[in-house]
Image (cartoon, rainbow, N blue to C red; front, side, top):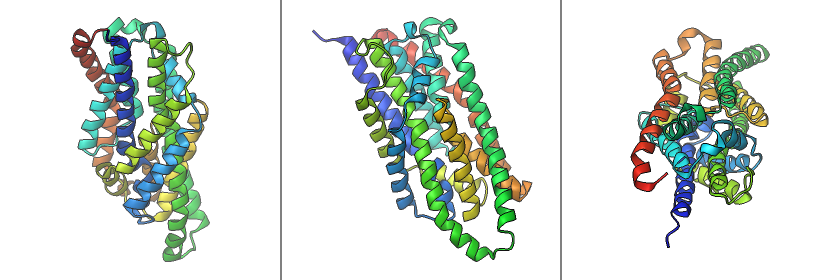
Length: 333
């Protein structure tokens, strides 16, 4: 006899890994847009480096996975259908924003997706508002920190190298930027691959395969590989928006952007807080651009990014809510 719950579990795992793959090519720009736009690396080598270091970062810690798996919804209301609909909502929103070249947040998308799905299943009372408030606070504060640190870091560089000839300065920072881009790619892995780890582990606990929330090694490996493969596929639409259209960058600017962003993301990951790598790096680019002059920022692109930031959680929640309502009568709850 067909075990429907086991089939649902397998489907959830498959869809979560697809989300990780999409997250990889959707968020590739986070790590490499600046080094591609400044010609520190070619697109090919930048994507390869990002894929390898995304994998390495994903294997380091599971604190963010625990926050996603235990801090958003009441475990007693988590079913396979809830997890499946939540991930489907996040995937659909990621694809929409990728198509339009908008650097939206996969972190926001998966959080919104899970919120929408569990609300469709059990109402808003099933949400963990205490945990959600901390998560949302981190998602709001991290871009602000990115802007401030990027701005300050760039001012420091301008003071330290104010008498350096531009050609020699750019040549030196083009090499340093390869290191900072690697640092950013590693931090991206520590933050973003863990969302799918949390989702899959949540589903395993719901099925009864795990007695408590503890991410298995095979889950870490599967998510790390999926994200690395997605990263290798690249995401040129968003690379262009972030690295070329938003603020015109030189190697020294790219170095400051990547180093500031990676510092914020790694600090948050160490605390188990899920940041948006997309919004941290775009806010760091904003901070660096403002250090030059206010007109250095393409404000039309900034507004598009801001709207994607505002809309992602409610939009992905709405899509996940609809996905649950459509799928649950067919596949069961």
